[in-house]
Image (cartoon, rainbow, N blue to C red):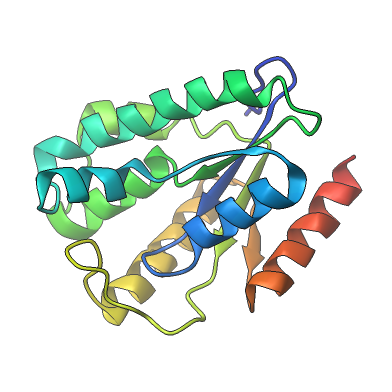
Length: 182
């Protein structure tokens, strides 16, 4: 598997179940490094449509997420730290499809199989679960999706770093990772 690079941009997938701190971490890392981050499109979708996605929405959501990632990579290419923090990827959309519908649309599965990131970070569900309107369901779903995510990464032999603890601890772990890779 080759990491996706656009003009030297290193894409970093930040994955995790609902209410595990992905967005907070991505925003903080982008600010810390003067880098670019791609917010999770699902949140915008839910807010705009005032509903959770239907199964038929999953592939378009993942496709939009990836398109926004590609657009952000162009901006990241002009930064000193050519890092792009991706708040979720099609892999998470596919996992939620399995969680809610027991299957993954073939188009989404193809998009999901392109997990071509320089690093994959997983946010542990170790903070209190918080409801967030329509988008979050329960602590039980959060724990099940986390388990499914780790199993999927292991089955695909995708290396990842599990980030636990406070935001400061997570940022420190990412600093250590990126420092070793420089």
